[in-house]
Image (cartoon, rainbow, N blue to C red; front, top):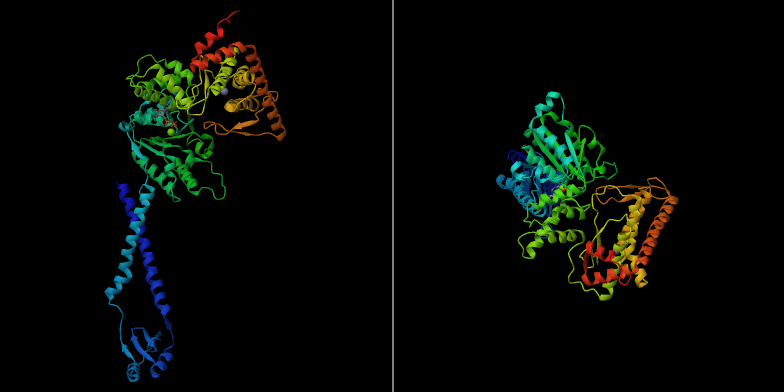
Length: 607
Ligand code: ADP
Ligand code: MG
Ligand code: ZN
């Protein structure tokens, strides 16, 4: 509240200063200029000759000047001249007869004068100001006059309602954060030994791995005030406002110590300052202020700063040096056990019928983030409601995995019988190549029901356990599986379709990574590419000579082509099974891995 008052005071002060400047300008420059524009300055002797000539029709004598009008009828001109102490003037004017004269001190009453030149403009400006501010508020949806007001919200336990129990997996991150919580509870314990805790900890990881959730859990556990602000909130319309907000935030935090300050998406303000001309002044000022504030406060007092980002490599090195965000807490994508735990945490919130195999779901969702897993559980609950059931069943869960991976089923899509046949052979091509190689993951499900993501069908392979490494053999087997779809089309129909574009893209990506990053080709163990945004898609940039680039390209196409030949050979050898399985898939639309294996293992009829 005090904060608000101070700000209001400051705003009124700014407003008053602006008013004063405008008024001074208005009275000292504008009004005299306007007056002067119609009035010609002349000499006193000109005035006298005009009187004598009988040309002066009016004269106004003020304290220091004389204003007079010359001419008659339509043509009248105003002149002014300095007043000279001339005792004859009155009689002279009187004698000329034509002049009407008076001795006015001021042409308006003092009150009128004051009203016009001071009060009216102020009223006008206040009106204008309030209209302007109202308009701005409406457009920006906030308070435009809240210059420098920090919008850091204070979170306390009751408000986030999250604890470490809500965060599944992420054990390393939780451990590191538990230490911070412990420090906030009993700082003496640390002070006795002389240990000081890091001032800041940076949560880094891909989107949806629970960084924001972890920070909220810390707030819930720590039982201390929790200031939460997002990096983008510092980026303001006016240069300097972000810096003011930082100052404000840290002042508040220091008053409330021990407490936690959480800056989400810190990369918005913490990007490397690159000194480019025309760089973002506002952002750099904000960052500089943050650096200064982090140095300024006393770590022993118990202010801990948490920040979260999914682009740690883009942060300014000054931000990461010891004494600032020196501790990095990784929030990586969950492993198999982590995924299972996350699914269970979220499944607690929905009613299940007890038939769900969480381990199977976790195995089918390799690479999914916590947010995606939470979404899968929610989708399955929605599906149960849609089909009028009261509990979530196993099939709800399995279907929602596919919804999250490939989108909803496109029931309305009409696909001709001919095209369905091509799609069926394509998918069985993938599955058959996978099943016939020992380094491939088992086939889990094959379907030719189109999905909203654009997939016309897909083959799901699920590993038995968690895989952290991929051997060269596995990579080559995967390439063969990816080319299997196209190979089946070629063998059976003697032609190819556009349906393989996604497979081609994936195969090329994998082959390229094998050459440039995994050192699995004749080019040897040389890093030819660097990954840029590890947590966000991971686009790469080439760093080699153009000759090497050409060799990479030919090596990549060699790998893919060899895989293609291998897949074609496997399919030709098993052409009977290919037809049999494709037929079966066409009839059923979706078949499970077990059904697939049963047909594959069955002895061909008549042998
Ligand atoms: P980000 O890392 O992008 O900040 P969030 O913390 O916002 O991700 O996570 C989004 C949602 O995903 C959370 O609200 C939560 O429901 C779910 N989630 C992510 N990770 C976990 C986890 N380890 N345990 C439980 N839920 C999680
Ligand atoms: Mg977040
Ligand atoms: Zn395919």
